[in-house]
Amino acid sequence: MNGLDLNLLSGFRLLDVIDILLVAIIIYYVYSLIKGTIAVNIMMGVALFYGIYLVVKQMEMRLLTEIFGGFISVGSIALIVVFQQEIRRFLIHIGKNISMRRKKYFWSFIGSKKTDTHANAEQIKPIIDACRSMAKSRTGALLVFARHFDEEYYQTSGEYIDAPLSKRLLESIFFKNSPLHDGAVVVVDFRIMTASSVLPLSDSEDLPPQFGLRHRAAIGVTEVSEALAIIVSEETGEISYAKDGNVNMNLSPEELEKILLEEL
Image (tube, rainbow, N blue to C red; front, side):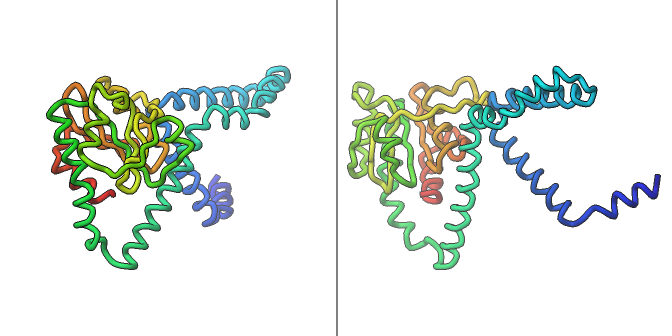
């Protein structure tokens, strides 16, 4: 028995350890992306189906083996179709991490962003003032700050504006009697590109029941892109901030300003 154990260990290489660690990291990333969604239940069903296939194959039950084997032979294509959103989210998550690391390296190479802090504070001021005013009047609002303007995605689902960012314009758009108050305002480089944009809703099952369409849309768009989102609740006047599918709730205008200075 000891000899067998030694033989097994002798064939175990450093590359095998690295291989196991890489597989574990991939599994962790996949689980972190599908956790709390209906995809977890689908994955459990797929794992159970494959487990039954291995059992019937081991027991040499030929008919069942042929049936299950036929399903598994086309299973890879079916899985791509079923998990297309999760696969897209996984690839975006990887690309986002690479992009963030490149930005950190770039800024560490040329120096800090202190020279831009004052300029950003001036550009962020209309956003903070508008959010403060809308929170007091309990005017519902959803602002999305995109890194790039995707015309096919945002423009087809909203009204194209391309106007300078200002407090009055934001308040006018989200005024309850305005035809553009439903949907999101998309901001790129401190310009309002579109209003009344329709965003993808998050399908996470872990969201609090008090979250309405604005919060679900903010979480959904930050899950599938590098965008940031600000939500003003129509019911409570509470200001929230969303990034990477996570929400910071009940922020003061000062806390929001501090976050935006770091992120924008």
